[in-house]
Image (cartoon, rainbow, N blue to C red):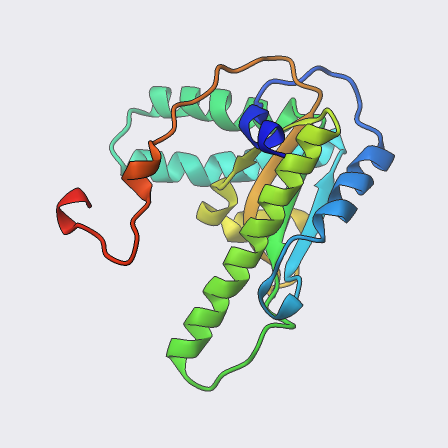
Amino acid sequence: MAYLVKTRRSIRRFKPTRVSREIIDTILDEAKWAPSAHNAQPWRLIVIEDDGVKVKLAEAMGKAWLSDLLKDGLPRERAEEIIKQESWERITKSPVVIIVCLTMKEMHKYPDRRRRRAEYFMGVQSVAAYIQTLLLLAHYHGIGACWICAPLFCQNSVRKVLNLPREMDPQAMIIMGYADEQPNPPSRKGLEEIRAFNTWDKRDV
């Protein structure tokens, strides 16, 4: 298991080879054993294989990102270049695009804002646990994948393209396929930088 965790990479370039629905369904089904608050399993998955839908999604998300980049003061030409490389091509050239959503339908309901907020974050954490499990299973089955959080910045755009109900909260996009790159291992913080027993030295934060 340690080998699986340490050898997984974020893959952003894929071969044009189609990934069978059998493999996709196997990965998504096995990932459902991820832990979740109240065992509510609040994740919902939209699997996109159709090239036309990918284009529409890339256009909508790109438009929203362009607006943000221009607000940040980036020149339009540079902003459009970034979107082409980091959004358009990744979405349209990925064999499989999965939009992972959160639904609070089966999460606990509270009358006060404090607990509703905590419950929402519990749902978000549950979805994140599912995504991490999915990534490891994809790697185990020989499929490359990358977790992209861009839908968080343009949830309404994603909802509109995919005709999602309001209660479906887009949280992430997973691009998948057979890897066409071998990224080098990224650096990781040492254990002493992230672990403390009982107390934490504020000078290290």
